[in-house]
Length: 314
Image (cartoon, rainbow, N blue to C red):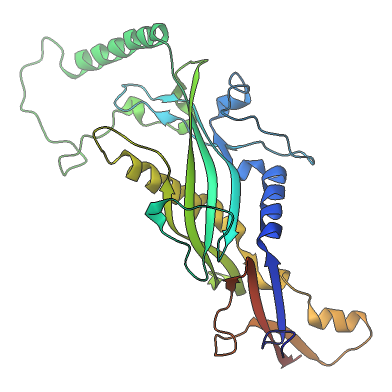
């Protein structure tokens, strides 16, 4: 079993192949790595922090997200923004191409290192726009006050918010759909880019509602480089938390790989070659054992997966 590394089937891919695949994914599906508000398809289309190359076969450049709310405004207002991830690369154990920051330590066995560049852009309105909108907001507040307490009305005891628990409910003017949020006009996008490093691992696992096993990418830790505030604050921790959440919930779920797409369909292969066997051959991950101590395995700059054949009657 030396050729198949103590399993019925064995497959491995070098980190160079993984990074080439990531590069193609970023080229073919830029919307997985670029997020922005709708205005970036129009007036702000040239204001991205980094230019986006249109995919060869067509398709969206970025994923449209709602605007950043202007908290407390009497009418829903939003600021336009973009978040772009670039220069994504992976270094498999033992780790010889990426230098991790001290906060992450050295790369442990069966793990990979991740590097990417994250750029956030905020469309910041100028003072004249803000002053004009402030006058409108003041008028809305004044109208709301006068409707709530006309001069002829007798004083009344203030009642608690209808939501209970001491929570101030949103005004009716703010209870609208995201599509009804008024953008705060701006032609000036302020960008800031940071280098981000992470460490993670691969594992087999099920996906609810779907048969078979999936190869999953898991992020264990993340660190933003050279984000220093004076005096020290929790800003870096907050940004790292947000980026971890974006990667874990917004990017990595797209990278799961069904086991059956990793290798050939053995039963179909035999049938196509006029060798019906009257049985169904499927693949299952080889169990962890003395001969196969890690599955999947990350070692020698490669990701390795091990399979066994499972034969059942048809």
